Image (cartoon, rainbow, N blue to C red; front, side):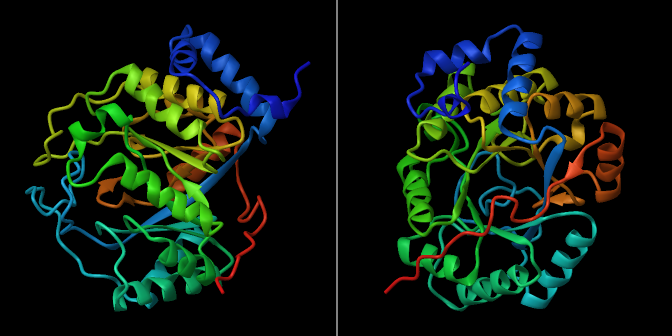
Length: 333
């Protein structure tokens, strides 16, 4: 019997991952479910809630995003929220069963200004509520990552979106290396890494596996990998993409679970379009995190009550905050 640790590898090849992805579906789900139970508590799901602390008006050109200023998608631009508003929303999320609050700002990168100071205050406030705090604010330098760590940031989300080869078809205003660099800065500050991508943007199975290859072969695999199904929004370049089928989502979740056995795999955007049966299969195949609450930044998402009812039905429990322990912050000198 192989030891559990030998399941965690950082030397995958694209062909190996593609072979897993193309395994007959029921066999794939079985393999992923077995791997999941070996490394994680099968019935435990981490529940996150997403707050858009600053909406719209972003200078980037990400083809999927309704918050890009250059597309006309009917998203109202809102300036940065107040700390008090954010703590009230975090309290509601906690009452609804969430253990993590993710704060998203539609910025290209973090600038050292009063807005960033306010975000630091938000991180401190939510951290004081005994919840894990995650931010997604665009690109970060080392010093900014350090400041967030010292404020008590638990995780930082920065998605790769797709494979390195496909990336420039989707985004032209920054490079893949920019993304990887931000993730490196997050790692250096000892903040937990949350990084995944989106399927359904016209990419091939090779691209999907290419993205997983980059993530799985990082020196330390991300602690959290969100798998999003594109929610095609009118006004964006990807508005005419056909919806992702549940079978594609299942393949992606199962493959992610097999190549990253201990990572929290988050069933993210696109869940609104899924049946409870479809989601149940995703949990079986290794998904062990969801976003709950009525909106994912700007797209609809199932409500807390609906999700708690699904948990009851499937015998799932919400994971406690800081199940992996609190991070040790290395203070800069």
